[in-house]
Image (cartoon, rainbow, N blue to C red; front, side):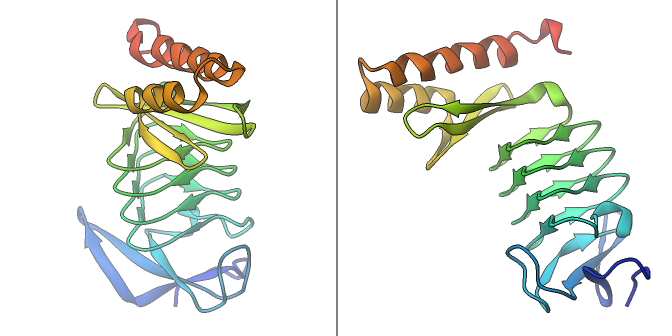
Length: 197
């Protein structure tokens, strides 16, 4: 069992490790109940305690892996097969899932939701807009491999799929105008990369 005296949130299990890119990663186990985590729950894998804050509600599940100088804190949730490394920082209420890979100097924060096969290496690949649409929700746009993805409410998909869904569901309403304005902003911010490199 590897843990510091200050850490009353989780332990790193010495008998449940994996070797990943030559780095030893330890499965974590909750030692108290908090947020959506129960005492005794197993989590994902970390290289050391600096990767996952023990002062906040953040957690990693499944086969998610965090190593290097990457840091997770706040209420952030990482799950599935997500991989976080380098100097990446995930915080606030951000959620990373699926096969997403976050590295480099990327910072994912606020209420961002990154999923699927996304690959984020810097802060200029994503942004959120709050209080949008009929449900006054948070909409996250992120770009990976020159495709923009959208996550809002129960919708997750490409920008084109989102635009089609908006036209079908909110045709000739104020919400259509609102969503389409957000779509145009996403195209400017994420597809016009000259200023954002």
